[in-house]
Length: 79
Image (cartoon, rainbow, N blue to C red; front, side, top):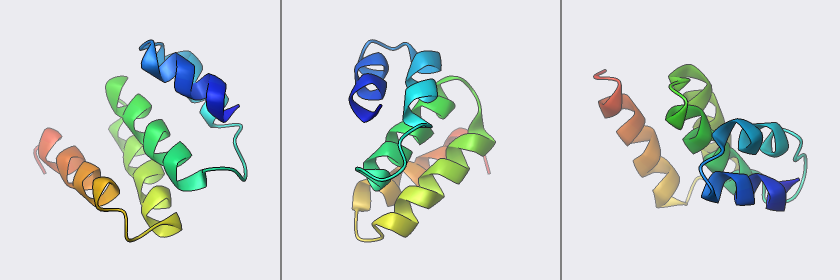
């Protein structure tokens, strides 16, 4: 599911990417939630994007890219 979600993300088919990434339960959980957050954001689903990025940060709090994306989500939504 992760690989298919990644492929659909890279081809900008965010709807299909979300479908596959939501099925990932164990492997690459932080990266999966980061990608899921990006896909949600690209579809304008900011609340879901925030939830997914928080899960990524919980899974790997030392990854600065996740922190930066959370910040950009706040700025993007003018909060």
